[in-house]
Length: 449
Length: 40
Image 1 (spheres, helix red, strand yellow):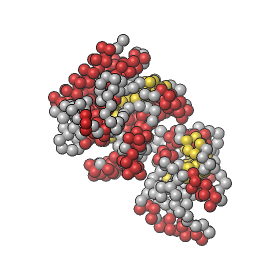
Image 2 (cartoon, rainbow over the protein chains, first blue to last red):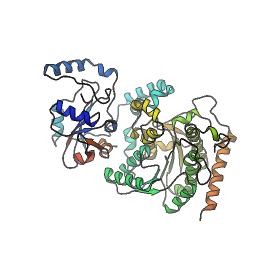
Image 3 (cartoon, rainbow over the protein chains, first blue to last red):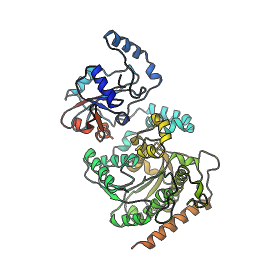
Image 4 (tube, rainbow over the protein chains, first blue to last red):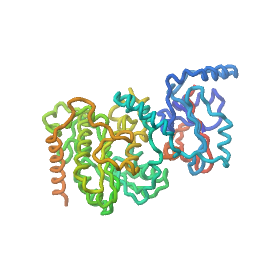
């Protein structure tokens, strides 16, 4: 099966030009290329091998036509067996780097053993990754993008995710797309019982069905909740039953263009990112403590680095005329990081750990819809949603991730919470955030029927 | 996560515009997935 990078009309012409009569799929958004981890090149496209291959192709009568699709994308070949075992993997390192046909034919022989996809990386690569990361991480762009993920991933220990989550109850908010979906998919793949907490019941159900189909794990279902509506959060907590909750991932997010007030009179970003998750954590507290080792994970954003904790006008009342969704988003993402620290203190005497993380720049539907210009400019270097979700999954599943509480992680490692001057909050500002969240939660609890 | 799990849920169109779920490709027999650099 050939997968091509470009639109369907180019595929038809390509098929005709090269006399192909077999099936041909098109992937203009490069979703499958990214899911497969295939590289995009720059200088690699100028390889001498490409020149040699081009000359050979011309001698054989082939002519290069206009390039359609992403010209920087590199290719690869995979052999997948029934049941999903990977028998062959070839990722092109440059434009003239092709998979040897003999190797592909060997992989098709059922006697050829499947690839162990969890094989450990070399300690030398891990050391090199850490050393280079020290230099590039402060530069942000080469760290937050997909190349940053790849560099950091050289230091990841695949054994961390050789775990069985059977019997573990995992709740993921905003799980019908993007990082939430990928998190739920990975946790289900590891055998966990996964509840997708989604605003839209139909999309939630669709995502749950898709995850069951992909993983074969039937313990996946969707529950409807609007995190921005505190009454809806209370109703969800009542419906969930008294079973222990092992993993709670606060992932649901919004980036509104205009100031929107919820039914409780709270600005939408604050309600969705801060007040709703705070209330849910509070309502599930006893169920989290019932787990032998629960982890509450706040999915924040690298954008929070740009803002200081906003406590004087979190509801955008005095700034009403100057509402900016991106600023509101970043301010509430900063509040999530502070709130994770405060919850870690609050639960310090329990078995529950609480941490925040940021996924880097990932190509999610939310980014595409809410930040179209940013998406257009940096699309080529964005992480896949699965890469963005990697640290969430690792925090939820890996025993080694439980050594911290009250920390902010990125690519499986704790990071500083402040990169810019003037963004450090005071103790009284932290206390003010907690008071506001508690006050909203008290009011919601009082309204509860 | 296995590569096949990551790819299985994706649906791509074929050259005629008909959707194909990648997971269906290796349901009953092995498949060679060839990702080409670009058309042209």
